[in-house]
Length: 365
Image 1 (tube, rainbow, N blue to C red):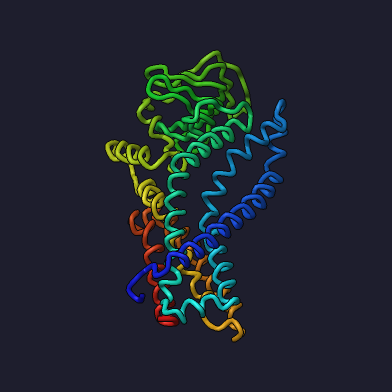
Image 2: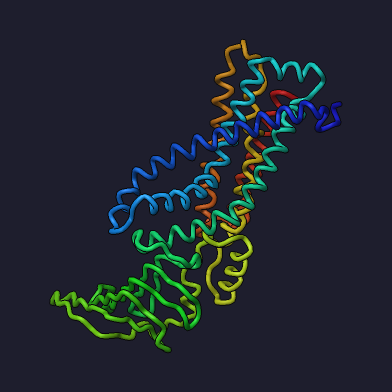
């Protein structure tokens, strides 16, 4: 039995069922609470737009919930691990399994297998659902919750420089010569970096070369005069190819599309450390669910009547939350080049596997 990772089919199914039910329960609880708090802070902005009502609130909820599921599924797995293992310990079920000859790793094996399957499902959910919801939500936020964009490929909050000029746009649709930008602002700067003129337009299209601002208004900073212009061409050094690469959002692109964006950035000689770190994290992030049973395993063992069960549960929770903190810090370091992208995405995962195994082996094996 010591060399059989799953020594009992009955025990495996029993533990897996307990774990899955608790993951789902924790996820529903977290998503409902966080969604209500999110609505409290954003419903005023949505309803402030004329014509918006309950349907727009429901649209916001449908776009926000996938993001919450993606973010908090690993937390749910951690809490489910602690609740499951503490209950098994209190009911002496862990003692019974160990008395039957099962090792600590064999007790955890069904939970690890279940967490791994949940992690794979989470990866597929992220790439098929979350990326599309994120792209649509960011585009909607870019138009201040006005008409919901029908094009899921809309890019939001574009910012580009062309010599002394700066081009900013709320949204961008299309590609190549068919690019169209909305809520466009062109800043003309002095040699010392201060702004001399500001041009605003509701729409801009490619003028070959440059970008034509339609129905533009000009504000002159020096004398504070505002005047209207029929049209104006700016940013003649900005090509459609540069605009296409202006805003690659890794959270809005699936795994395979982000690979193509990284290749395009490399061909253009652009820095790709941030994109590559996010690319690797698209794998290591969902896989962190597999790590949670190992980090929470300390709550499964030790006598419940010894009075240390609560301390063990707190220690397991502390190890789990420490992982999320270190993971976020490493990803931030990788985004600006402090760590290599692969190391930024995978180092926390590998480090905490070693920490979890060390704690488990030294205390139970």
